Length: 286
Image 1: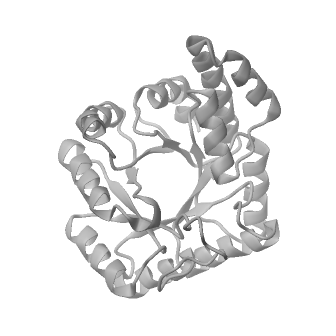
Image 2: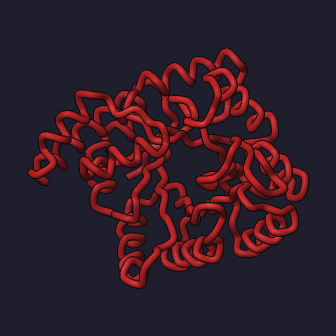
């Protein structure tokens, strides 16, 4: 099926031998619907770049689909980031996701420890050293980054990433379509025209989605939280409700002009593919 709206999937390097053994099957199942690309995360503080590289080479070897490794500022040096960029370029990588990254729990400010403190500095470095060799994606926060002192400061930070040379952005997960629409209106007023793709996380459980939302500052609407809490001991009913909620969110986003969707798969194929199948008609119309 060909679609007008783009869609992509996020994976993370497996953390256990059991997870590593399952990942090729997950990749095969997700690749069957031909996403635009797979993004590959790494450990907190840039601790697992080798795992990122191994995972992206697995994706390319199995599928031939484009991959986009994450690069972060935390613990960075210009030399190390330069080495990684050269390694990725040699492997045929053409897309990078440039992030500040998660700060250590002991961090006293929003500045990342290392030679790059903010994502706009990382974007500038990639452009200075590699020109347009990479498409650069950055993060956007429709509900405001949890460590930002204000919505205004957070938006200024986003603008700096765009000015530094970002080609596109993927948002943090959210469950309130109005937050995305408002963010896009602010971007239009600021003259920002890069594609900003909503980040979508399927709902597969009560405790885990509450934890994810709390960790990234995303709002889980009260009515959704209460329904999930009520259904947490009835897995089929919870999955059906979660699928309905997220599918309606995605349909609303596409109807309102979202250029595509980026799915946070948590290295599971089933929940994302069920959602993708529900959305296929809407994506073809978008």
